[in-house]
Image (cartoon, rainbow, N blue to C red; front, side, top):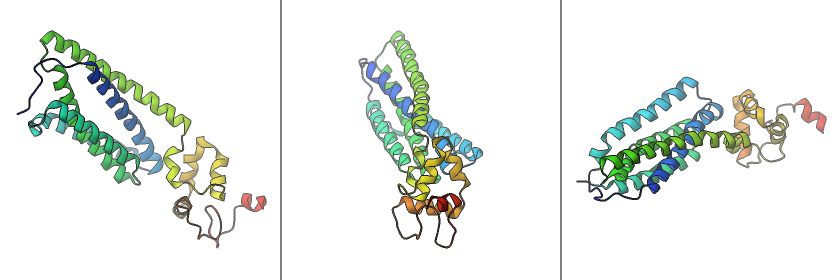
Length: 234
């Protein structure tokens, strides 16, 4: 059986944990649609379905987390779940396909179902009813402030570097493809990527890996004419 503290624990570290977890959660909630639609060309319907799946998994686990982990203390569950969530976020950041990204985030939501019940159990254990009410009020203020803060940070980061999710697909520095992307500016880089053909995207990925076996720099192959702008620049 789970052993709960008999005396109230210090509350502030748990308020901070709730705030930081929801900051990171809201960052991923904001980033997932951007990356899924712009980098992996997912439809809005698919993004909505995947987002619903993630929250559904969290709800199912949260309802059964206590039964599934009776032999662990709430503190152990909370710390283990926090580590698992951030490992999943790291896997999401290193993903190279929509399936990998969605799988990593689904796992993070699953693990999070163990985090929140454990945090609240540890926070309120050993407290009289009045203190439980005060602590839960402050707990709700902490996580909701995190939810408000995360999107603002996400928007700031995106405004600073809107092409950041595309860094694994950029052509080599100073190649024709690199110059073409730089010439259109950061605000329209995603639109330009979407205009490329499938073969063009493959060549773009090819140059991003540093392979130099194509006869011409950038997007173009040897049997294709150079664009007028590139011809005029010679």
